[in-house]
Image (tube, rainbow, N blue to C red; front, side, top):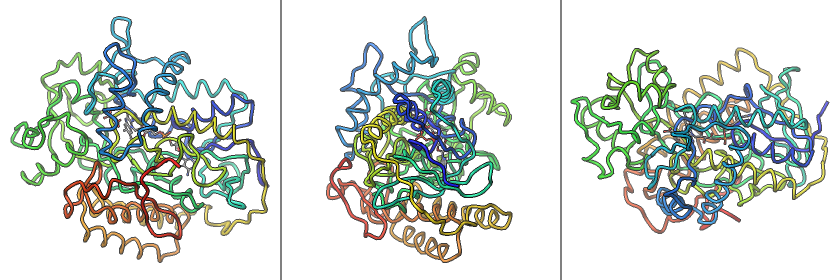
Length: 521
Ligand code: FAD
Ligand code: SIN
């Protein structure tokens, strides 16, 4: 039997939780469907912190300027202004709700990250900022009686009727069967797609499902070619690419090659604090030059007491791998980290499909342009989660229950054989994405990737595998279309920025890729 609610929020990271709290203010019933346990998300693993204008030597203009410079000419100025000004308001509110950011001498402590002209990053428990944000938001959401959190409820597709999103199809964790739920509106907060790549800092839930679902529902997707690779993921054989926060370089960490030389001066005068895309490409160049698979992060100039206190999670994790961050050089290499592109929205989280709203990493709001400034995404989730929730309330669509028929009721039911195929498909896509649609791209590599994806698509794929391959195709198609290098997108065959491409790539189901000068519509 189909379910009904007032609003459906998909995802329980910073964006989903903040949107739910906003919606619940009205007393409306909010059902939060989330794929794993409620705390499992990219948000939970965020380390460095959240950028916000709150220190005495900072102001909104400076934060905006840093964001625009990082975005390499593709940010939407209005979106950036909204992020920065609303950001301060919503962080203050989070503090009122009980979040505990780190302090020094009774005052908020701010750290430094690359491409920020001020120390403006708030952090919590040293390097566990995301975990503290999730804790505080879940505690706040639990105070709202009208929010129902449904964990392990994997959503597979959106139900569109008469041009409007009226519900979703998900895998009911108790019935272990696909089911529909209908609502006045759906707010998509499913996060990013770091898992598209073989090496990633993202947890397993970050498979970009929401982007694919929105695309199949007819929503416009923007700037999918822009992927941010984090320069310093711990690089050990057979271990996940655990993130070594940029804040470590902010506190004085140095990058060295296998000969022990500090090499960043060869590539950029801002050294280790150059923008992420530059540091990542410099590391790749240095690894190629020296014939190695990693470089090293050197924290040994800092005391063990300071490091243990400032980066407790990183300290303990490295210790697990028999590395003492105060004494050993830490092997690092770049890994996929963040998607700048996603579902195109206006400044209130409205997508191009009526009744479908989106917030957080799943979106392209125009705040990040071609490259995200470090620690701006937790802020984005908070600000646009709240705005998306408010817009869904204001638009006040009517509940509409349709005779939606499951295309293939079996597709969502898991069995060992389909699980095996899905794993194999995803493994292949991740390899192709890493090798051909990665940090450095060119026409040949992208065309070969697209040919492979086409071949993979010929198989009888489950919905989740189909979503995954579709997303990979969207990234590769946009990367092939953009014949220039800008921000997180680097083409060996077009290494310069080209003003002709100072536009956003737009992709929509059953249409050729096109461009638009603005994200917000
Ligand atoms: P997420 O937090 O990823 O949440 C997505 C939610 O959607 C999850 O609950 C997931 O389970 C759910 N979901 C996904 N698919 C489905 C589905 N099919 N059905 C149902 N539910 C689904 N940013 C910063 O600003 N500062 C930092 O210090 C920072 N550090 C980071 C460190 C790491 C290791 C990583 C990976 C990212 C970091 N980021 C940081 C980026 C930031 O964490 C994310 O961009 C941000 O948290 C995204 O929030 P979100 O709410 O959009 O998505
Ligand atoms: C980090 O701590 O390096 C991650 C910060 C971010 O992705 O914004």
